Length: 361
Image (tube, rainbow, N blue to C red; front, top):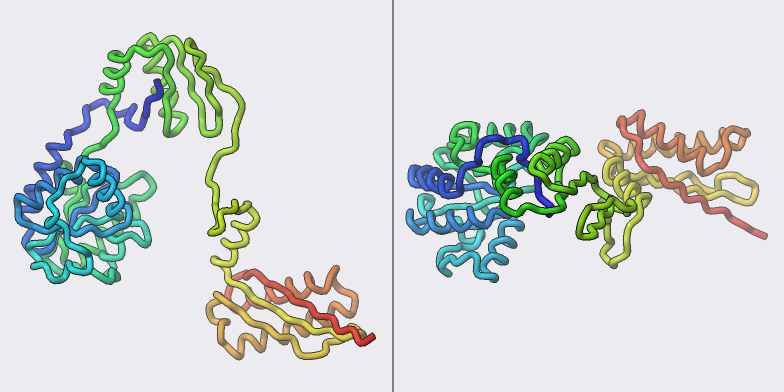
């Protein structure tokens, strides 16, 4: 039996979704203007409860965020979510709904950079704005490591005069969907598996979950991490070979992108690119002044003075190379151009050198 172990260290029993729904309904009823609830899109049970709340308080529901739209569409298609057809309004129509008649469900509980809630908090969402007196309810928790951006987002909302409710002010707005230690123990007692495999999470949590299985008399427990193939022969679990794992990037055409290509794309995005074009005659002399252009390099892009300084540095490097310094012309010029841009901007860009040799023979 595989079992998820996220809350193996939580002794108390998590609260119920009904208790959360009662808290949310109380807060939504109190809201005087627009009310926005941010939640994890995968929590379909909470979506069901919020839909019921909206109907009882007389608010239309507007979805902001692709993950929410997808979850609602799938849950509706399989019959888990049965919202009336007139409950939802398109984001484009939200501005026409009276402020006290609108309930917005938004993604972005972790203050993700381009999420709906983060953009709203910055006043940058194209379809929805919040005003002083509106209400935001964070029906979620900050995942470890995300505390700082979440607090920053909350502060931005408070600065705009928005009322913000979260687990900090109202603990009942969220409960974990993961079983606590007591519930995990009860599940093992009910199923009484012969084999037990803790899954998902840190090694510390996996080991604690395996200990619980052994404590309850499970004959075969196994702790493995990502990439280990596991075989179950009906009596015990066996760790087999390691398999390739991790993220796989697929290009638009369907082919897999290797690590070098991904790194090159990352470098271009982070540092920008400078392109140097050199035309050399058959006597290894410059046949024309160097041409340089840049993309994505602040203070250099389109700056005639900076580009001229870069071209002069490239020409100087070419002269030095002809005096016997450096390995290859392309590499020597590339290093010089990169160093010059770093001097001008503090950025070490990607530098591409295009060398054209004229042959008059």
